[in-house]
Image (cartoon, rainbow, N blue to C red; front, top):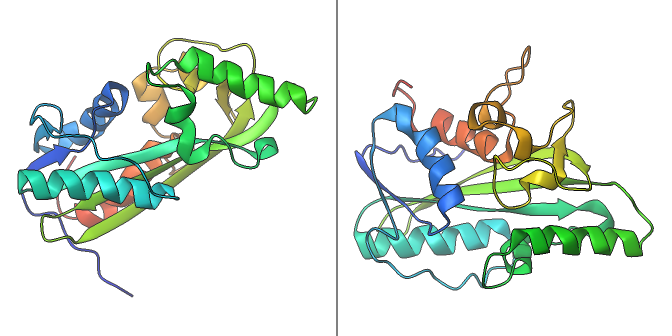
Length: 214
């Protein structure tokens, strides 16, 4: 078994310009006592996401920030994969929202695509890949997924992105109707994080932050 490199540095770059992701990663990292700075705060450019997988795009972002800032960087590449749409929008989830990040429009596109297939409520999953990168080029990956139903109309304004049309299995509410604590917390009676990002983050903490207390 390949040993995962531990994160011993105290300062970490959040390799993102997406305010929703930054907020969630700050919430998740907060209890661990890191000094956090974002790619935007360091005026780092966003690399073009040319990868064909969540892992490849996460690495592009984390490595760009780590090398430019000279310190470890944590990125997230995530998206909604709808079964009936052959996994779309998937790694192109942000691009479906266009340059203005119009996610109400993107959710409408998902709904329209399902309607064309005569599907009212589809099935799918949220996927998150967290990548931790160092300036020397070393990377570690942590993947989390959560299954659920694609619902219409959108419900809730607590999350971001496609949250209002995703209802995780075992719940009557969408991610858009959940507080941050509900979305990322633990399902009662089960030792498992709820959201895709929290599941990926849990693996990251177990493997890279061993010995640090939350």
